[in-house]
Length: 389
Image (cartoon, rainbow, N blue to C red; front, side, top):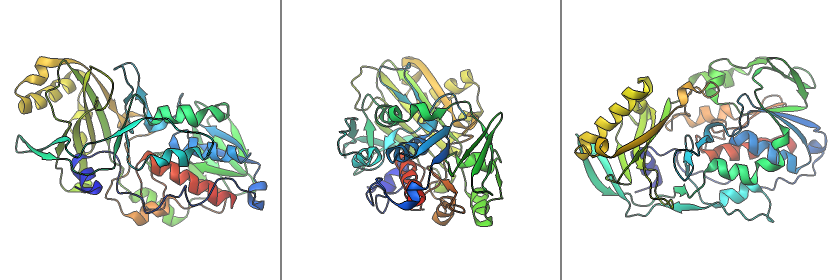
């Protein structure tokens, strides 16, 4: 089974492998005249792309100011540390490329990244749910890996955040960006910030909703791309059971593939734990009806759904649950761009404007890859490289 087939069947976050590592293309150490002419850069958003952008610019000695709307950094790498004795990733959960991407993000040969991950066995038990029955099959080859006693957010906290944490301002909701003059002006509800250049890293759904106005207006092709990409709804649930009665994966074949994805999976896989945690990952139409149910109705629906598959074992072994609805996150409003989206629209989203306004994030890439943490980090690399070349 190829990685793309694995993603389509299982619905695991992410898409096909990138054609090349944009990190590996060149080092972030730059002595160009353009870099020396940049005194300050404002970064809108402190998710993976915002943190990576700030970190790489800081490595070059360029002043950065990160404006984050939430009271915390990390964006959709949010985690829960109270539910189990290992981190529960409420958003991005898997590593979809080789581990070398950690070193590429850190961009420092003197630092050894010790973040632990584990691959899935080719013989990992996987069931495709069809016609009220699970059809067993092997998962086959996949490059995807699970974090061990860690998460994407833990990686950023350990290796990226320490050098830039003092540069992050929280609860700063950006309302407008004016890039008509030599200095770019960024307005929040109460303050005005100026810089030589700006990197916008907010989820594209926020731009679709008109959360930030731009002066002058963005080019027509970029506005068209923003308005026409499909951002999937998204939710995750985690349920603890007294015993494990389920396979590592239960995939659902949602058609057409562009409509969404749904997957139950063993969230405790590879962890040093005795807790049995089953995860539910859903995007697009796969989120229905979960995102429309109240909490008590939600867990009843999930348990009934699992009981029908496992002969009542879900209700008999239920301990507790937690639920994350990304549609209701005020500064996300959804999950990520449809895996089957037109790559040309993605590439347009990632283009810069007038040499002053840059975009980075899981949606703003070169069109080779999108909707993953590594893609967000690589887009940050691209934006910084273009800005300082």
